[in-house]
Image (cartoon, rainbow, N blue to C red; front, side):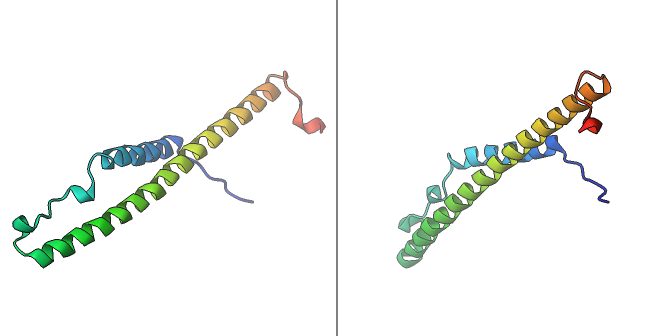
Length: 107
C-alpha cells in the first residue's frame, strides 16, 4: 500500500508567482539593451561579434521565457486542481460524517 504524499499548495503558488514576476521584469530589460557600440568596445570586429552574440542570446532568453511561462501556467493549474479536489473530498467527508451525504459504504 502506498504511503501517500503531501502537496504544499502555498509553495507551488509561490513558485508560479516567482516565475511570473521574473518574466515581467525581463519584459523591461532586454539582452539587446546591453551596449555594444563599436566606439565603446574599441574594436570593430569584436563589436560586431558581440552584437551577433547578444541577438542570439536574446532569442535564447525569449525561448526560456516562453518555457517558464508554461511552467508557471502548469503550476497554477496544479494548485487549482489540488485545491478543488481537496474541497470536494472535504465536502464529501463532511457530508458522510454528519450523515447528510450519501454513505459511500452503501455503493
